[in-house]
Image (tube, rainbow, N blue to C red):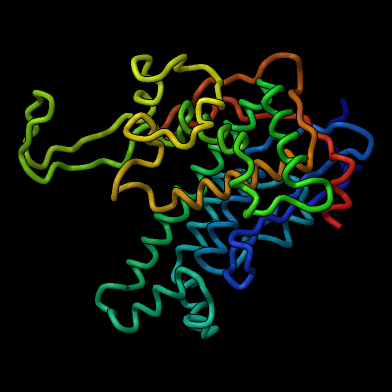
Length: 337
């Protein structure tokens, strides 16, 4: 097996969401590959940059470090991206740039819309409030997508038949003459089932956002005083053997009838307090995972299965970052030309 070195060529995949460029959501991921065989890669840094750029384009209408990415073969780690975000993106400079360029009303960005609201509601939409909203959007929006994609690829590499089924599905519905598009996702049922399975067993956040009881109540015999904080353990519910048949098994087909209804499945929460980024997260994950499968052949770096041990923290990343081997499919260069 060949490893990445200075002789490797680069291949750049571009992800766009939505598909209209004037909406400002465009991101890319650069792979370095050996022309004659497989190359090894740690996926998390590349996925981090991809997710980071999608959120940055949505928030501020600009892509992070695009030129340096082409010159620098080693992608930056997630914590470095977040550090740069905190230093550059959340500083007043980004807001001032929108004002200076007079793009408040011209650009379809979150900061642009918030600055428009600031004109009529200045006391509420202060610069500090806007910076806080940006921070709340960016950090969770980056972490959750990256964690979901890394777990999904790990599960597929440990289940080669499921990986091949996803590739066959793409071949049937997309063919070999074009790249996967966001509008194709509803047809890729197995791919979406893999993502649903990942969200069930490995949700990016095992504890949902805290809730507080607005009044005294009694639930199933439990006396809940007013203003009691409630933490819902979605990870435990979604692995409960009393609720799920073969609770820890890799069975994407269990989702073939559609999304699981009710309180059995809640990686994004439930009801009106559910995560507002749910649809965006699912579409980005589907588009990214599907594109990686369509354009590359993947396999484990050794015969040993991928370690699925969970790390520590509020999020549930892999304890060991995913290392995988990949090779460019013969049709990929034509698709990207």
